[in-house]
Amino acid sequence: MRNAGKPAFENCRLIDPRKQSKLGQMKTGLSTLLLSSFLFAGGTGQLRSENTAATGVGPTLPSLVSEKCSGCHPPPQPETMPRYAWEPTIRAMLKFMARARVPITDTQLQGIAAFYTGNSPERLAQLPDNFADSLLKFKKIRVGNPPSHERPQVTSVKFTDLDGDGRKDDIVVTDNNSSEVSWLRKEGEKWTETKIGEAPAPVNSTPFDFDGDGDVDLAISAMGYMHPNDKLIGEFHLMINQGGGKFDQHLLVQGVPRITDYAPADFDGDGDMDFILAMFGWRETGGVGYLEQVAPMKFKLRTILAVNGCMRVIVNDADHNGRPDFVALITQQHEAILQFTNQGGASFTNGIIARANYPSFGSSSIYLVDLDQDGDEDILYTNGDMMDDNPVPKPYHGLRWLENIPGGQYQLHYLAGMPGCYCAKPADMDGDGDLDVVFSALYFQWDQHDFPSLAWLENLSGDFKKFTARRISYAPSNLANIAIGDANGDEILDIIGGGMHVPGPLERVGRLTLWLGQGEKNRPAPKRDGE
Image (cartoon, rainbow, N blue to C red; front, side, top):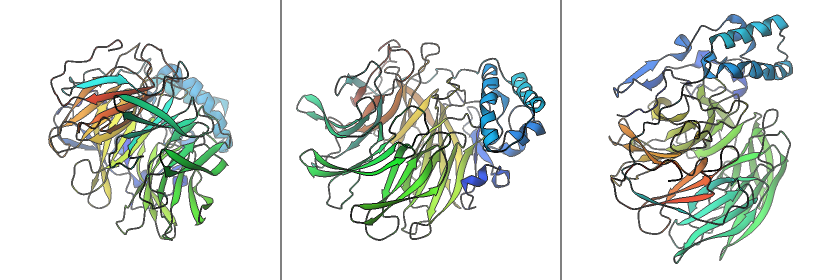
């Protein structure tokens, strides 16, 4: 087993989701619910357990730090950020401490700053670029409309069947620069991209059938303005497929915290479609919302949980009773994955599946899939968000797998390190009958320390206990979103990547890039500069 870039310490803890625990209670700490987390011992392929509550990482935290720095997240260890970042971070936290009415004197503040600056590294270690060669052969091409800005900002890409021909070869694209939702497809020998909808800062558009007529409808989660703010400018749009590439667009929600995702299902069991909304907000606004369809095309929004940073929501059935539940990824200072369980009538309880041990973890995506194909649903989990006040790659960025094990619990596996790791999708890339994983990075410091922006994990054992990380591409960089499907109808899996080039140098820019699978192996390693 190859475990490239594995950090020396673990940094995510698992909590029994059967023990109901509201996220608001997390703000006082939840050490009593902590289970043993699991990680791979370096290179041996054997599992080792480590109780992070008991052992921690780094120096023992002074009681002052534990008292003052645990109001809304677990107190972080000094080595999670470089030395120069601590003083401005601590100063920024004063505002939040004041809002939470946490008293602190100048002497106490100086003591906390001295502890963190005195015990943190001058710079963080870099993850080594030591992935194996791809073995899979791809033809890389640029597709879609030319970028309207020197910094393309594609926010999502999804394979689906928009034209109803029975093939999922259509790609839905959302673009922050153009504020458009578009349809990318191959027509003859040409790739065409057509506008089908619009919204301010659209960030996601998951395909589903809203009206039960058998075709694919869409909805748009929109932030209003993508860059960080707490304004109530979020919007949610429904796009009903009329056929022939036409969609009837309806604005369902506006004037709420910025929305980043949605999950469609009949949550109240009354026979029509409702939605869970991920209202990210920023620092002071946000929430998990339930949008109930109270009459045909009439909706009512209520907040299930008031919390900032909700980034992803995905439908599941955790208790196997036929009622739709959902999983939520809560980022910002919370860095947690929550299970919301439907008690009937869209009344939800929630429990914490996993929570990172510190607020700089940078959670970026989750994906529900039976990765080891044992009949239950696991969670792929990436962390690598660098779009914050401390925009440096962390040695704990990468890809993890939360394996669903008997008893309603999860076992944590570290899979691969990748600076800026942002998205992961499962697929049988090599056609051997088991699931592999393709993963990508929104990494914009490649000019200082190079690393692949796109890679895949080859499943060597079928149950994903043995695997090899393999590089695919270094350019374009900043691949915040990827999707896997058969774009050209040759029955070989392809990869579409969307570039999110807000920061960073411009030598590896790309708006929409398609890696067409060639069905061949033994490809040499990709070139570094522009490939």
